[in-house]
Image 1 (cartoon, rainbow, N blue to C red):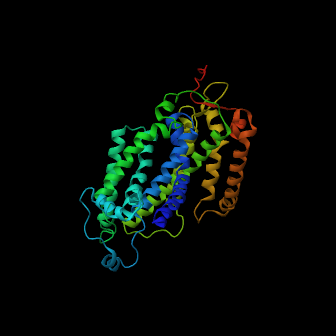
Image 2 (spheres, rainbow, N blue to C red):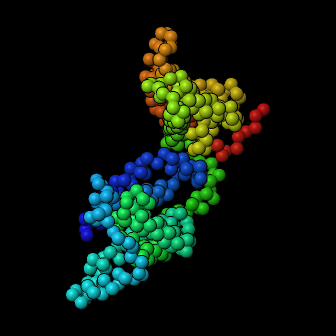
Image 3 (spheres, rainbow, N blue to C red):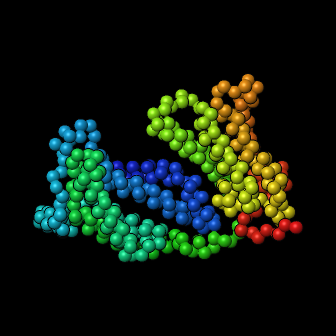
Length: 381
């Protein structure tokens, strides 16, 4: 019993940490857009959600059958479901005479019930306090999730496994729901330190200092956006070719270069230069904007700032990804573009803390200051 309840905890910690790491940057971007700033305590809550979510799956659905599923089901498959409410109480009572006072809860049936309650207490705590739902909604959500788990077990993950590989038990639903209720009731006490989303949203429009970490996050978001958009477009292109029965290119061709490199470059680095303040999408996400003497820049100033920043890095990436079959002179330039792009990225990142007002290399070259976008700009002359 101990191993059964300890190894999913390790899976939850490791898997939850990896899941949180994978979504850390999107979570930071989400916090900035929703709250206007980062909240370390809310971020800690997001990590808790990731760890608990993976642990819940591990406890309720793993391990899965493997190998010859037909043979496994013939040997270990479960016939039917347990639909009689409170039947586990009879199991506890049968164990009680042979045990010392208070020991029924240490019997297999008693421990199972206690574990099922404890397993859903974090659900109630997180949904009530972190997601800001009421006691009734939190408890009902625990009920629905428990029903989903038992249905998944009973149907063999909805037919993927040709048998019920665990006992679907109505008492599990009841004890899980009780745990969600207890967690919901205890949440205001256990998570008093967790700021509510509404409290943070109320101060969303307040201007805040421009920090190095904020500047770096904006740069990272731009780099991830151009990369993710390129991957999505290239996968979509290859999917269309496959659906049409066309041969897939062995390497990069001009269509892939256009969709995977040129289009993301235009969308991420060119288009925002001519919109509003001229800030990149990453900078807009973290509420940053360039200003020239307190004013929005002219088109020429915004183009100069972009050309000394992300747009130059993107242009070097364009050149380094050119497909085969280009002229020799262009090929030589393309061969040095990748290391130049890497060098330029390092210089741009390192320059941020050493420039006035954290304006970075592009600001120093173009004369732009970096300010919080919520500051009211001086009207242009």
